[in-house]
Image (cartoon, rainbow, N blue to C red; front, side, top):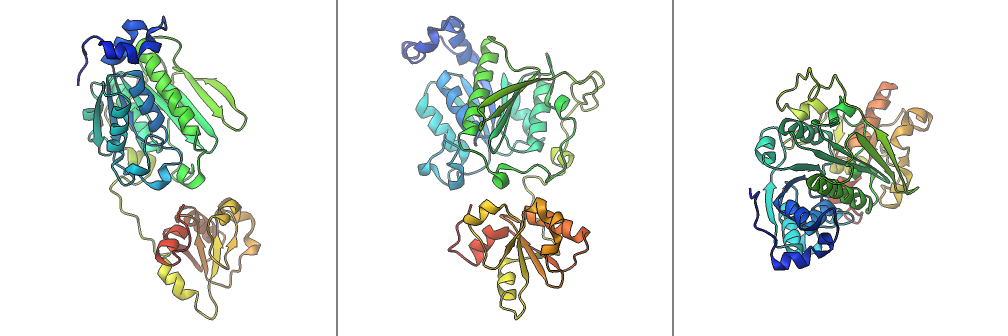
Length: 385
């Protein structure tokens, strides 16, 4: 990839003039940005603002890694995409928008999942990694790649109204594994697709990630190395936690035993990108449920979503007990009837099913695909969300 670009031309001097007026940047700093390269993993909520501001700032080479397409549900927060790019590859949508913003930069688009097999090939040669992902397996992978390549990894995380930000750089401070040696149990931490996220929150955190990357390239200010920034949008508060390098870290410590990339899906207990949804014996399809509801004694429908989700969509006759309350409200559930549990997509309801089974319930089924699949297969008047 290009690393030694020609000097700024007349048009670029005008484009970046507000940078050139800053003593800490000037002509020399802007040339550093032009000669630099950043790998952005993910072009979603965090990646959208980061990509736009890196492009606008004049970072010379930007790599985009994603293998998804633009969906309508993305547009509430993934501002690099638009209605006109629905169903396009995200890397293409993002690349075209970035080049429209700044045609003087190079963009490498990688329409592929970031995996142990291709990560080193993709990341080698970049100066900084920005982690804009939303899953633990890729976070550990991007961290380990950054450690092995000796480059900084700008981390961001979002959920509902809360955000986190740090710069993990094992050469001079802790890495992600120093803070989180082990991933949480699979399914314990809800994703944004299950728990939601305020649309502007990834804009805030993603822009801050771009800021940290630019500071690292220019060698100015105090990057968040050894610090974890916590942001609460509801109280509009920023807090910082000091982080220390873990001497027992398995990847960056003096006795590290992880010296090459591993199977991160197995490490985190999650399926890989080529995983096909598992069929469980206690699953029931929407069409099967539709038939059961015509029986003289229909099954009991147990909706384990949060109460506010009922305003979006619902199935007539269902009782609502949020998944975390199910173990404490067993008396509300009729053991003498067949029980069909459901949520948005089938994940939370499966967790509730296991909880009920532990409590001695036996006549249990889980609606595969949740109410969203019901809306597709049975009741098309219901909205998807």
